[in-house]
Length: 308
Picture 1 (spheres, rainbow, N blue to C red):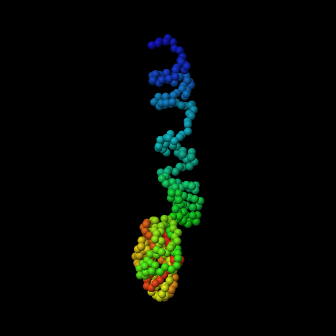
Picture 2 (spheres, one colour; picture 1 turned 90 degrees about the vertical axis):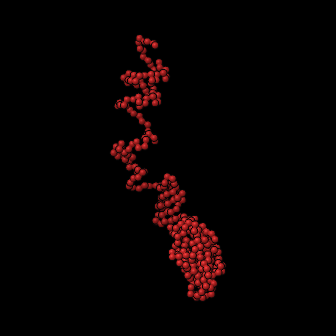
Picture 3 (cartoon, rainbow, N blue to C red; picture 1 turned 90 degrees about the horizontal axis):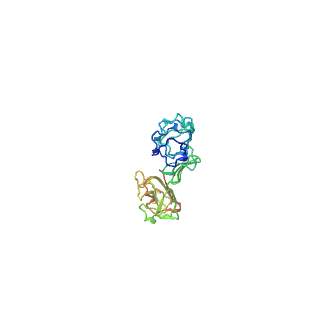
């Protein structure tokens, strides 16, 4: 081991990079009083060389200028800074307003949305409540389902509904198997206009897409061939080919031309409110009674819609 009688000053040029490491110094061997001012600069310290365990519990930084970077996401753990650790009104004074707690809060004033945004759930961002000008819209999958316009009128784009008009001339009882029984008007050649998932089959049957109460209406023009009191007709609307659709199940529901000695009987019409399950169908179902009678296709209307 070399022994020196005198100590010479060691400059940074005399120390090879990496030769002097922390484990070569005893604890407290280097004190602040043994270092000239500004001897150790930030650039002289390797990143991570000075850890919290190498610093005393109390650091005197009085008279020092501290330089901070901007706070970014992840600097604070969840719930690290509760309200109790902030000065009174600290958030309000710095933001200019009181934030609303997203897990539940009470607020005053208006929340204003632009026309492109919804009040929606995170899993269905194109379904929910939307404000467009003076309209209030309920949307599903980006499509408008219900809107209240600026006058407060409700408008539904997908409400199940249909309207149909018959075609052609006279229809006689023998066209449906003769008098004396209920007949489904399946050869009227209806022209349909439908909405909201309504489907048609057998020309007269209208199948509904959702369960609910429906208003259904049928009207036509009746002619009594024999001009006597025997040429009457019952007029009915069936559900799944059933006859008794009134609330009491009464059959017949209506009767026209009974005891009337006229060829023409005006006002042949029938309207009902009836519940149907999804997939059930409605169809016109008259009864030809007594002597031969007939009704006119071009004067027949067949329509209905979902009430709710």
